[in-house]
Length: 385
Ligand code: UDP
Image (cartoon, rainbow, N blue to C red; front, side):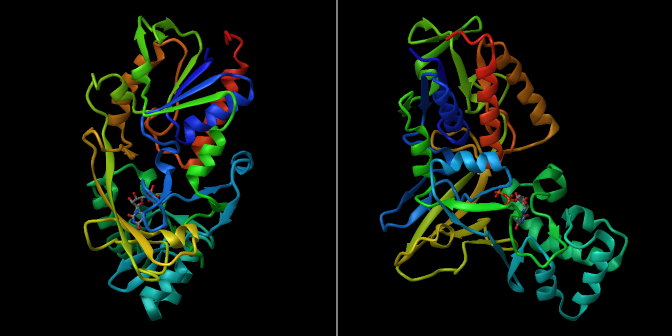
């Protein structure tokens, strides 16, 4: 009856479902939560404020194809994301850029700006760890300020480790910018869906060839014997795309893959504004990493305001915990590869996404990856249905 079973209705699974359905395949999407949209899911809280239940999400991309694909399912509110960090100097722009330099370094700023431009070039992005290790005393001073006031404590909270102890690619996502530019992202398109992310994903999954079952996991409907998948007791000859945590699918038999989870608390206030900006990172104080004020993120016009605080922790696999972030390092990759070998031994079984591939993806990157995998599957001559 089905040509494809997709486990997970987040950005990865929903995109794959749509592409395959449009090509005429009958697609069953199983989602173990009671809603679609994965961690992009948003909903109105009891006060009517649109909140992101799993933390703030902003869509940003330079990928034209991805932008066009998603724009079929939603209008957009364009949004240039800016973040402030709460430090002893007050709220300062992050990523640290020339505006931040002048705010913090007063009369020394002109001299240091010149050195930054001479050393790295106007408009460049420099990872903080690189700046920290320069021989020039002024540049080193900037590096030390930025390390201490923006990265060290935030990264300790987020990862339980110092910036130099985590994969370099993680802090490089937020570099020091040699430009007068407070933008958090540099992409051509930056937006939130005009009716929210949930509506976007509901529209994407709204296709006559797609059946969505929420509250249902892959293990509820299928089993594997000798590398063959069975669905409802019968041999399943179609394709299965799995977007969940691979270690958990295999009962964590080689040990748990480490993830970071977040405890996110929401607070509503009957006042116009709490912080006046979408996101403030708490980079030197408090136990939470950041406060998001949703009305500034979604540009919703509403009386009252709702904020969230994010408290990162180690993921332990408890029933209500969500594995948000993979922890990229060689040891974890090696453990992942053991599960990946088992996955490859299952016929017609494909892993897709941040959890199943154990790697960080922005929304646009995973949509592109899902489009690519779906098209490759469609081109495969071995497709039986
Ligand atoms: N980071 C930091 N201070 C900040 C912002 C980011 O130390 O004010 C570091 C931190 O290690 C974080 C990483 O840079 O995990 C990537 O930040 P990003 O905003 O991309 O994290 P995400 O939005 O994925 O949680």
